Length: 486
Image (tube, rainbow, N blue to C red):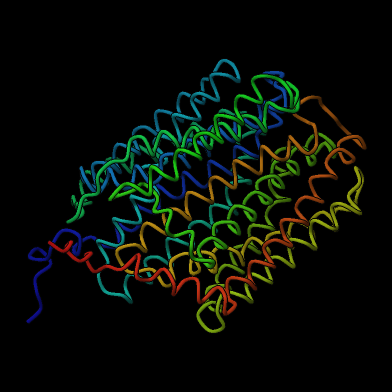
């Protein structure tokens, strides 16, 4: 006998709609990030902003996001995923509206940070809602596939929407569009998404959370402010020192805690450590590439925001296609091949930028570089996530994945900061041939990062890597530790 729909649990009656609501949150967060990058030259023109201010406009968001992702996930488990998700939508929407009326760059940076507080409660919590809603493995796999596809769609649509809005109503329109989507998502969540909590609630690690924020903020702040303050300036040195001190305190603190914010024992596994370094390297190169090429397209080649957005389309399409291919390759051949393909494509694109990019470079060359860079980024995500969680017991896999998600945001923040540090654009403006010349050191850095990804792809899948993972299995076992002898 078929069970009536009204007798089913709420999460089963409206599963398709719940998935759509969760995808809406991913869409506005991902689309907003890409659209803001396209609008940076227009923001700079209106406020007469420095390049370092543009860096903070991007990094204020990614830094706060990186610092709060793990905390937001554990908070949702404690107080309820639906409640946390709704709160995130409200905060993100309010932050977006405030960004649209920001009177100065400083206020825009502050409101971007507020946006990120809301954003930290969306994507990881939405994934928890999806996991709770789709219990069967096959249905869950299809739901996660749809979720992942939204990332590719937002990558393709974001630059075009951002360019179109900037060209027509101005850069503030990028933030206006989040408001109706956010409000609709809040209402739909209230009506259709059931509340859920974790059966096991982790204790909050307040000091660990503070140390992570200081560690990340100190490093990124020093890299952004160093070029114009000077690397020997007291503030630059103080920021680096604060970051180092936070790291030195964080490790022993986490080792002593029964429920740490980040289990540092993970890092004894070569595959896990390699995955983290690979994620940071890949997303750092990608974020710096987007930041510099957006300025190049509009301030050197004098394209409109919409034209610049259209130039990013080949990269987004390549990323979407190769993300799907990477998933199949990981399932059939393991993580090494897709990571080597990612490294090779990134190295090829960066070499072309270092050797052949000119103010009047042929459009075909520029579009080909974007396409190849998209291939490199597309082959990155699936294998590094697999590397991070493989070999972990079920109770630890979620934590490992959360650390990997945090590393993506850390890499993004680091890439934008390094783009200014290596080019010196944070200290002075450059245009035309001068911009191309000062950007060249960053492309050589990307070549190094691509080589690092290739080396780690071999190391993580080597016999030494497998032994290191097996060697910590007893430390991360799901079985409770034996009672001490009396």
